[in-house]
Image 1 (spheres, one colour):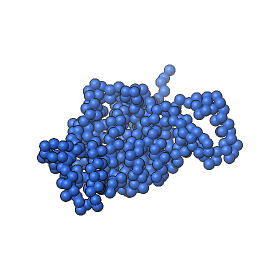
Image 2 (cartoon, helix red, strand yellow):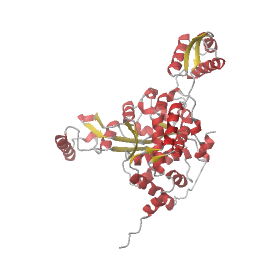
Image 3 (cartoon, one colour):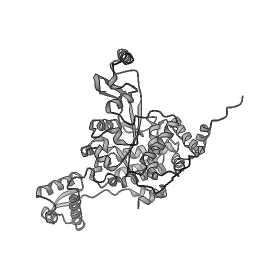
Image 4 (cartoon, one colour):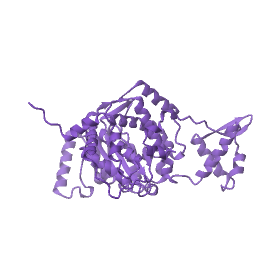
Length: 448
């Protein structure tokens, strides 16, 4: 009996097995206008969505899954929407269908995540709604209240060209919930409108959104900087690439099939727990213990979660090569990619979340750093002499110094040379595990 002819997609998947999906995707998007850093993080996000909870890393008592919250920030015209739509089309063409609505609410999002399609405003207004309510009641009688026979996981991939449309302005409750769901394990329970409740097993959320820095500031109040959602976002800053195609050619069918084939293969084959080589584990340990936080107080909480983000990237890059073992090369590539994104995070946010005395705080820090270089603590009088014209009263200076102490930028000392403050020694970043040559030429240029 003759074997059936392999489909084009299957043949493409086999051909892609020896190539990284990232390489295939860069070739596929070569003649598009979004900056390469957008295209990189879009395909990374797409892979994360495909993996869901199928591929993971056991980290002590907890499990790290590869889901990510990625936000592309740039001026109008940087082609954020183009980059997002390109990867969304490929992901859906590969068979993935758990795409969230472009506009939603906290309650509707939870219903979609649970797998229901009801309109909250129409519950009970028709025979079909009453039948749905009857079916829910029957399930609850059989399995217990909200404990239906459903082990999950339940997943949604939000690909929002306009993130402000998806989240809504000042929607703090929605943001807090998304922050909680980033690494949630077990059954998430919540009461929503009309007395309804949801019980969602293993909720798994991926977000890929685009927004300008101005809209970011309007959408997310600065109070959210200390909350879970903002600290879990990887912010990708991009600028206009300079590539222009008035009449772009359609994508080559062969290249498209290769990418789709690789996506299908990743979704099908990347299952189970990832293992890690000894040298890769040693590098990750050193990065964890020596990596310096982003020198911007707005990213203090992000920095606390950086290592988890790095493990997620290691999972995604391993999956892109269809390997279940995290090796040294994967760790260095993941760390380089994350470091490149972090380099421009402060620029992406602009003035968002900066305190009214943020510039003066930097001035105070520089003054204390000068004293640190000579080994002499800088006292209150010395600082006030330099900044008294910038502040209304000395108590404002005391608040600035207190904030710098809490941020572990400075520490108080008493010694023979006097009392005052010195800069707290920063842990030296393990930049030896960053290799900019692993990035594209365009990405290397923006690091200069």
